[in-house]
Image (cartoon, rainbow, N blue to C red):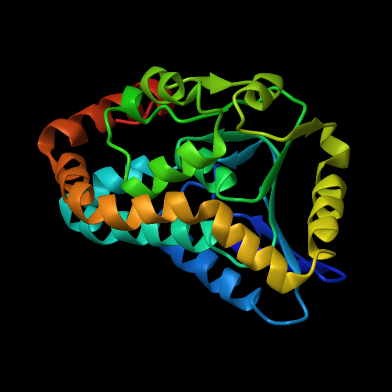
Length: 251
């Protein structure tokens, strides 16, 4: 599901979960487990990548429809925990965005310290409102942290999905490289960050992200019950069904 290989002291986590690396409960468990493995001292930095033309298409919506409210009561908290675990991971994390990074897939990439995207026909963005679902607090705060503040409201309200060069302008991506050079570039970037003193890097990362973390932990308990309720509602599940039919052709 998520393969762990190494390039010297850099761990490469390659997502291999179905055709689109769609996020479900098992995906969250697997990523958390791999990140825990990456805490061992011999690993100094992490690269997260996908295979083929999709980095991650976000939440597995057919799985949500199949499981309904009962599944969502377990899955949504697990998803937020996974995003927060990656966002707060003390070692350098680089996302090698090999293709589409949509909705939760975009959030996953934006939780990394640096993001590089392959120059190809792929898009990146957060169309949650177009689907008809609400943002868990952790996901929204990660996107607020990563994106250009002046473009953030439009990014959220408009559900924009941008090609690689535009993703740079939006603050979603730091650099665009040729597909064949993507992984090497990401590993080199991760290794350069790992050359910084580990304790200093970890503290600085915590300082940079503390405002976002404070909002997650103060706002989340107040807002996320409403987010959960919206996701579980018959109206939202019907909207998800309509989106799945329109985009995936699945009834």
